[in-house]
Amino acid sequence: MSDERRTLTTRQGHPVADNQNTRSIGARGPATMENYHFLEKMSHFDRERIPERVVHARGTTTHGFFEATGKVGDDPIAKFTRAKLFQEDGKRTEVAVRFSTVAGGRDSSEAIRDPRGFAVKFYTEDGNWDLVGNNLGVFFIRDAIKFPDFIHSQKPDPVTFERQVPNRVFDFASQSPESMHMFTLVLSPRGVPASYRTMQGFGVNTYKWVNEAGETMLVKYHWLPKQGVKSWTEEDAAKVQGEVLGVHTKELRDAIDAGDHPEWDLHVQLMSDEDHPELDFDPLDDTKVWPENEFPLHHIGRMVLDRNATNFFAENEQIAFGTGVLVDGLDFSDDKMLVGRTFSYSDTQRHRVGPNYLQLPVNQPKGVANPVATNQRDGQMTYYVDDEGGANPHVNYEPSITGGPAEAPRPAHDEQGPTYNDRLTRRRIPLTADYRQAGERYLLQEDWERDELVKNWVDNLSQCDRPIQERCVWHLLMCEDDYGQRVGEGLGISADDVRGLEPLATQTLSEAEVQRAANLGNNGPRDVNGLVMTHCVPNEHQAQVEYA
Ligand code: HEM
Image (cartoon, rainbow, N blue to C red):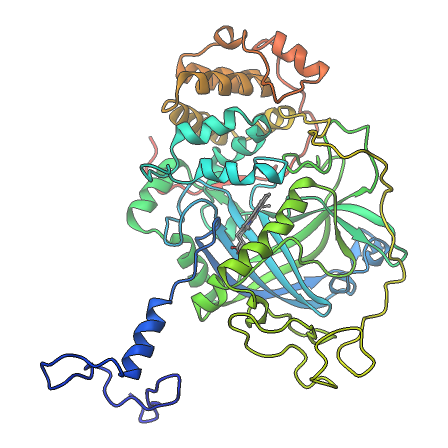
């Protein structure tokens, strides 16, 4: 051990001469209350935990960089967005990335069937941009108001605390047909990636790009891993879970430490920012993907992760992502999930981390052209005054002629996007199309994925009440004959058994869907000729057990 070890102190700077024995009256007498060292040490320990994330509590943060291509196809990217980080070929921006599971607690198993969070914080010169996505490309619901109910159905039973009770999960699913597409992915092997390095990432929600002239495009983001896509079956995952809970964090950290730096290409899909009556889905609906044969992927950069976190708490527990965190040239769409999410993230972070969470190093902007200068003051754990060293520290308000930060120049185009002329309402989007893409997804899966999907539906639904089973089989038959029939066979439920079910009161079926319901189980396979959807890349089965 080196002689240069530092002297242990309290946070008041007092050297600590004895860290083993509490001060007391005599060696065996009562302890005293004025013992500052003991009080500071113990009371800090008592406050070591902050509330874990209400979702995505189990995760791991890694650092690296994003490098732009400067182009969309043959066009300079400036034609579509003025966001500075994308403009030049080879331009690098520092990133922090947090991968996570959704439903489990902070120490829960990582080898679990669950969507994976894929959240990227870009520390750009214009401030932070967070792209908070997942590995599956779609989501279970399309309106943020359903999120607390959805998450309750996924979390432990409020009475017994049993985790993910199928009767609760599929009770909610059976009443939420928009979730069929996402369940078709989550219950397939894509629901248990073999590692964080071998999964795709998606922004999921539809955003906008804005160019210098104020013209907007709808945009979807895709991260494609250079390591390929690899997944586990339920059996593989069970074996791994029996041995280690934090398998994916360890695998990622070990790879980076060994110099094997994972890399993803960033692609976008673009669509004009207007109504699209020609489409059979709503491009603002996050339960849908945009078919890639119609909306091709454009490569706009790559991301490399090359540095592990050195302090799990400071960099992983306290990092805070949010969908509201955009930079100039990027914007929101009217996707109702996106708007609801944007409230939720910073709201929970003010509660979970504290009102000054943006002063923490991992959340602060880095390398910004304009250093942070706000008039936000005080609150718990204020660490410094933003704009320390500003011209006049007495001015913590704006406007002022005596000092303080002044407004930035207005963008050349401050008005953008479609005009609105409609009444306030609480209606569903008109084009729900809850079944088509789920059915197509089923048909486009590889055989081993489909077999595993059907098995997982049957295993889960076998533990559910009969009305939940019947409604789910009805939904799956609406997606695709073979899908519903195979799950139904596993449960002893035929199309004839469920043909009489009325659509849910919360559903409005299209003409085509009314026809499908009338011919339930006899609609013939959907035509997926030439169709390319997210995940149409090989998914390698990385077996962990011996298969017969
Ligand atoms: C209305 C819908 C949603 C709401 C209200 C919501 C809310 C939340 C909340 C409260 C957190 C915890 C944040 C924290 O404590 O720092 C969180 C984390 C997260 N959510 Fe959502 N979420 C929604 C939908 C989604 C969707 C659709 C995705 C994927 C596209 C997603 C991806 C994530 C990720 C990746 C994290 C973890 C971020 C991290 O690693 O710190 N969420 N969400």
